[in-house]
Image (cartoon, rainbow, N blue to C red):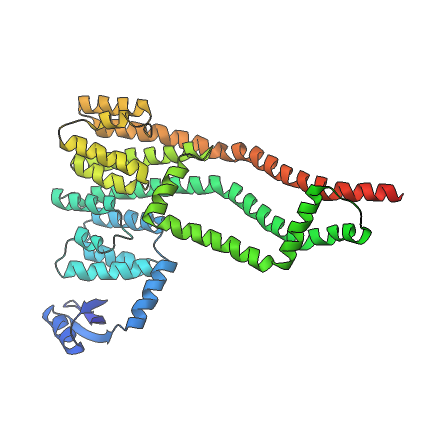
Length: 403
């Protein structure tokens, strides 16, 4: 059973957290054994656990929250503040309830003798494998502050990169969504009223006008069914993407979509090169670093290639040879990594690769709107032209004959 407690330590500081025990009496005894004076010990109900899990899903801990957390944590550790004191100070001022709860749990774990990295592993949905391994390397080397700074820099760059991608795709996404909503309303409400003219006048109309009329009449009568099918299709696709097979298929599709495929490739290469460089600088062995980056890169296609490179290095080979054989990695990247392997400066070469692709990605995201806008105009123009030719032109011809 889990109990939420508030207690005073030997210095009179009030602390709060969770403790596991078979009953309330045992929980109080455990706190007293740790030299705490219990103020309140309340059993955490299952319903509360459920609500807490829902809150985690709904609110979550965003990259922006993590950037602030790592920056503050690095500053406090550099100032020689104890880890638990630093975490408690951050927990006191954070506005994110989920992060606050996680920090309280981590404080309790560390006070029980658990290492910081081990405590972070319990929250793998929040802390990345890169962050966990960098913290572990910092604990072993005795340079935790530098490791946390590396994590803060990496998380901030990742946040900025994701923000650029979202801003580049927001405009076309909004336009397409608005076009679909307007199209649905036109076919459901406006079109049947216009085409009623043809029924009232009993005149001969072209086949394509008849087709549009039938679609409009169907939409007017069964709009709810169409809406269910559309929403069902969207949710079905989203659910399928979350499955292993769906995620893998979507990863392949992202690398084949015109215009945006190049942007996605640059994102994955940039993510690979930066994270691998950070891990190598932090003292993580190259094979383990490659296996960690394979999960961080967030694409099954690149993950397979990177894991294959890890196996190649494990057997005494060079990772550049694997990258040279796969089209997902540009030839120049494999050649640059080969130079780094031969000179023993792989991390420096990877930093240069990341800098180059970050600049290219920045330029590409800025030009994305200007690249997609003409395509959107053409697609929307074709849709409007079809409606004009199919509906307005026959109406114009009828009124001309009447005159």
